[in-house]
Amino acid sequence: MPYLNLRLAARPSDALAKAAAQALNAATAGILGKRPEVTSVLVEFVPEAQWFVGGEAAEAGGFATFHLDIKITAGTNTKDEKAAYLREIFRKMETLLGNVHPASYVVLHELPADAWGYGGETQEYRYVKGKPA
Image (cartoon, rainbow, N blue to C red; front, side):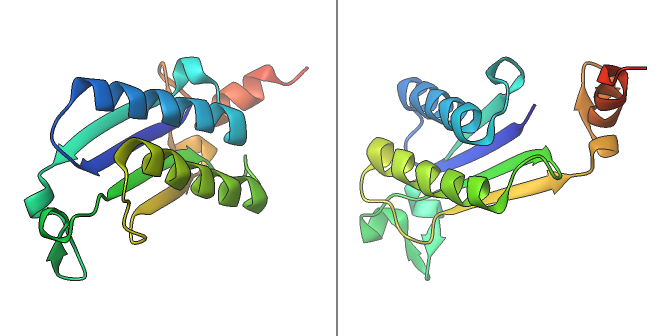
């Protein structure tokens, strides 16, 4: 049940937002093993003139950039899975955006299972509830 917040230095586009959300959902399910039906993605657009890397605006530098924050339950993925996920997200963003600056970031936040959830239940509660008596 991850939550993903993707910021793109790009002109707002419903088609780009949808393609990015679908790509993120596929990678999150395929690599991290998260259930697509409870994966939530927010796509936000920032004007290229207002996103700076190394003091240079993306617009002036002619590069694309992004920042992805993803929240997952702590201890549910290995270091190798997380590394593969970061590589795949960068590759997918290059496909969607073009010339992606290397200083584009993916940040995985691992939250304790008792500190978040959905549908009014924590991830910890779901775990305990699913265990045989």
